[in-house]
Length: 236
Image 1 (spheres, rainbow, N blue to C red):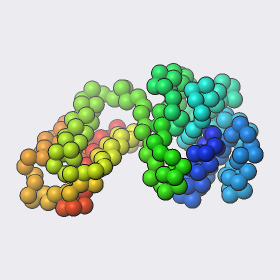
Image 2 (cartoon, rainbow, N blue to C red):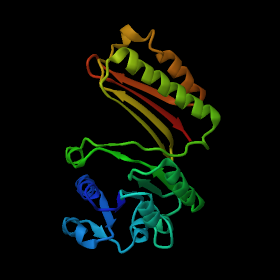
Image 3 (cartoon, rainbow, N blue to C red):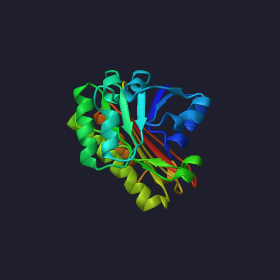
Image 4 (cartoon, one colour):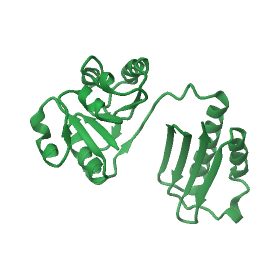
């Protein structure tokens, strides 16, 4: 995949090599090109503006100092918004106020593209170890009401099981939207369960019934002492 990265400071300079090692083509930009010298030598492509990064990419990431820097690289004639194709995705990993993110997202929506708020939780040490977390937020409000309700109820039941029954230390919730529909995943690292012993009392039947209401497909993978993953795919 063609990825773009704007902001090659302490965090960006560590994330880009991981993206390239994963097989992606990365185009980058930074206010100071000299900070990108090692990345360019390692194979990163350089663009002269954030717009140039977006023109070369399917998805663009940024991680910069503050809201002012986000607006500077995201908006305007040389900004990401000017180069991103219709339906393209921009994910800002900077830590800024929610209202600032929403204001920038509105400009992307006007241009026919998508901006997601994805602040990075971690440090250079956790990024190097591949253990940093990204908390992504976006607008799903245009989904039909019944789809939103089913997503909420299935996630609620899965999280309740993780909290009350699994003894999990970590739960990861992922909600993705793509050309083929919406995908929800709730995965925990708890004790898991054997289906023959636990169909009752965990709300599994209810989750399956809710999924069918929107032509969804629910799958549950669980093994004793190996954690549980609940996945819901809703087509469309």
